[in-house]
Amino acid sequence: EIVRVPRNLAVKIPAGVDLESASFVALGGIAMEALRLARVSLGETVVVLGLGLLGQIAVQLLRGAGCHVLAMDVQPPKAEMARHHGAEAVATEYSRLGVLCRERTANQGADAVMIFAATPSNEPLEQAAELCRERGRVVAAGLVGLEVPRKTFYEKELEFVVSRAWGPGVYDPLYTEKGRDYPLAYARWTAGRNMEEFLSQMAKGAVRLEALITHRFPIDRSLEAYEMILQGREPCI
Image (cartoon, rainbow, N blue to C red):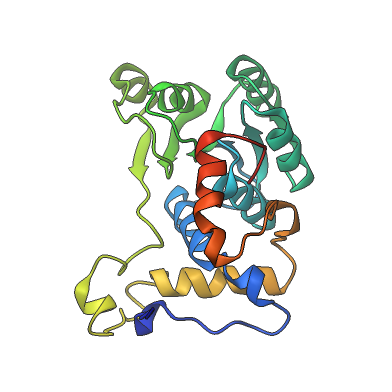
């Protein structure tokens, strides 16, 4: 009946962004924080594992950042959607993804791998390590197994981090409850600033959400929406 949003997590919707698109802002903030932790830069090759809602948004943000994006999902329609969103090459199995990664990096490996998959398996993390170049970066933003394969991580001296929500401040009571923002000079991208920038990316057309909205439900039928997703009754994003 009552929704209370902390001051630092309430951001202004820019002109040109409708309310339906703006409702993606929290999810966009999660993808933005994962990109920050991956420290991607212009011209780097980045692999996205898992092409659900967050993965599709990440592909678009990476494309906008000037990265060469390779993407994988076991479901072909999601892989093709990622291609439509700017991925230069897509795959539906790890063996094919490995070939693509080697071909497009002169056998060096990806600069970074971002994991948005949702599975208790440790396989995404193991594959991410194999796909990375020496001293590459792995970011886990999805709910996946986190048993680090030490041999590969050691031999390549890989960096690994688990991304947390929208960014700095989101679990700090002083930030969320007391409204104390972090100085920009010391925390350039807080949770609120990540959300604000995501809306800016939408306003300039770098992120498009039309294809991601596959169903609409009124509030009083929201349980049906969750049941449809959990039971896998039909394809949805």
